[in-house]
Length: 248
Image (spheres, rainbow, N blue to C red):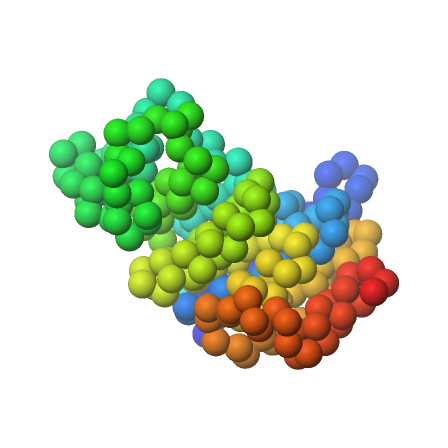
């Protein structure tokens, strides 16, 4: 049984069908990419997976339990970090623990113990405006982690970062996910990012959006810069570009 999956998801707004007949599954410890051009329905699908939106048809399952339309059962992080500007990095990170009823002192200590893992040691008392883009995303991911779920959904979390920082964040995130036992679904329109992070890759295309192909990427992480120069990588990139309708 898959750790997390959806079956035959359809979602429309008014008369416009946005995504149709989408099914996918996530195994424990896996990083699953959803790749497609802008406007193809990736964010709508992610909102359904997170329980923020209810589909017109289909269901979402977590370890076999139907969680369709129930928010908070899986971690969900949008492209914008949404850190509270009047709270420090540490206060932002342990907020989910407070919302779950944990005493502040215990929540603060739990978060402090994880600051080094998330690359934020020494930045506990900084406010969001004092953090770099990469550090803000680290704080947002740490906060999402403290929701306590082993499934995390990421909506283009690295899109706003420069190329060098993005590469560093890719390696960092995969390391953190491995150490904490996270299983991840992320959406992107960046082919290189998809090929760098994914264990499996679903291509979403068309209007309405649907899954048109699945590509397995059985290559060990982290994937070095040299991997992106290999003929195999270039072959995969040409294949993916063809699937999403971009000539190369």
